[in-house]
Figure (tube, rainbow, N blue to C red):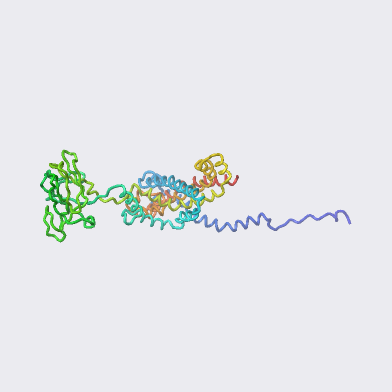
Amino acid sequence: MTSASRAPKAPRASTAPTVTGTRRTVAAGFLLPALVLLGALVVYPIGYSVQRSFFDSSGDSFAGLDNYVALFTDDTILTAVRNNAIWAVVAPAVATALGLIFAVLTERVRWGTAFKLIVFMPMAISMLAAGIIFRLVYEQDPDRGVANAVWVGVHDTFAESSGFPRARPLPVHPLRSAGGGAYVTESPVRAGEPARLPLIGVAPAQMPKDARPAHEPRPPREGGITGTAWLDFTRGGGGKPNVVDPKEVGLKGLRIEAVKDGTVVATTRAAADGSFTLPASADGALLRLPASNFREQYNGVEWLGPSLVTPAVIGSYVWMWAGFAMVLIAAGLASVPRELMEAARVDGANEWQVFRRITVPLLAPVLAVVLVTLMINVLKIFDLVFIIAPGSAQDDANVLALQLYRSSFGTDADLGVGSAIAVLLLLLVIPVMAFNIRRMRREARR
């Protein structure tokens, strides 16, 4: 046998696909449906919106940059841009700060889990349901709106309420306007002559429950001033003006001032039967009913008015998303090394110093995730503003996503401007997303 016959044969070139090639083909096959959906639902709409933003409302004529110029010249859209800036700065910061506070404070208490469950519970509610809830919370009527019910209760605790709103004298009554909502007698009062202060316009429901039938008191022996303040109205008719009729009741609690030369020399309040007495120093004075008697009843704050509607809607958003921030921060807090905190406490650091110099720096990556996530979320906020803000204040609460809807599908629809707003929203979101991607890559390299 020759040496050539003993040499090993060279292997044949294989025609089978390599392992690498097989994996690439399989990967492409799995990714193809997702890529098709991504192109149809994301890439194509973005491209079409960019193209459509350069055409007029009909889509037939090229408009150039006119639609983008309108974004920064139209007052309504400028309001939406300003409100979006307020949302992007305030809402994520407040929600993240509350989430951090809740996560830290509930870490050491037994009922911390129950508290976190309650705070996180609004996340299970849709934006639509939350909007309806807060539309009722912010009702102007204190009997229906929870916010105003609480606010009115606090106000009435520290501020005296008006006893007889909308009460007023008739032209035949011996009272005239003194300006500012007050009334004063036409002539000075004299000792021994009963003073009469008749009023009308007090609803039966606003009368004090313990008010009694009015009558004129007897003159005091010391020579003071006496009189009657009463509701000069007889139910069913038959009464006479300026006369205390048997069926008419006194204005209990009505404040009365005796004024001489612009100076208040004596004050009193009417009794349950409307009678009142002033000292002798009031002789020759004018009797004044101050405006505090007739001030309109305090009905709370107009939460959904032009000035407060944006903070009110932001409050509802924070109520929903503070639980989301709390859960993520609590998860990050669980991974913080306890040895560092205990070492700081041993070295004499108090709880605030431990929180500020150890807890917050170690939680910085988690806080950045929460803050960026919420910032992206608020840039496209729509539901809460659309539902909570009433029609009269919707222009003041306007945001870009709501203006996009109104410009594209409203009564004066302009798809060119709507597409330009969509492109502007995309441009605002891209830097935030780029920052988030860079941060994630930096974390992955550690």
